[in-house]
Length: 203
Image 1 (cartoon, rainbow, N blue to C red):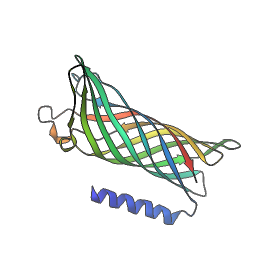
Image 2: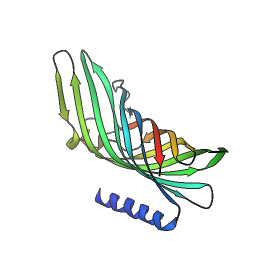
Image 3: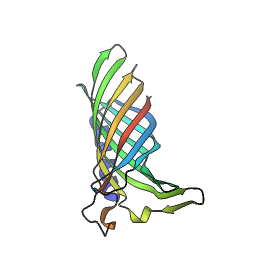
Image 4: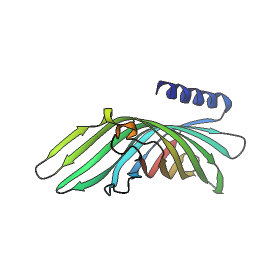
């Protein structure tokens, strides 16, 4: 994990030196996340509704391309119901997506920015939360999961009057959060997928 953070820090530093036009900002919004499992007998799960929030660095080039690293706190997981008990598997990550954007000027004060963003994240919270008529409890999972997460985001930002970002993206997780801990079904893979809606402000 330390090596990953060093590489990301060096990447951001390199971008800072390469591009003179740097803008800073804040971003936050709604997550609707679920799991995707290769196990055909897996229990059907529902979305965990959460949030993401964090910092933006936006680097503009002489062309229409924009590079936008972000560091976000992002809530993921899923829900399911067993008998009379509602279960939420909550997994929260510190995440660094690097958005590669193409700027299209649609009208005065309105730019369309399709994006693709590889990301890497690290779990800081992982727990099962049980709520029912006779149970209200939670179990910590942090030591039982693969804490390193990575994948790709696909989305679209609207940049309004150069200062406001309104965006939506689909997150395709590629890392198995069960990792090698799933002893019984070693061929099974569980990943995080979902939709993120956000509002951002550039300074």
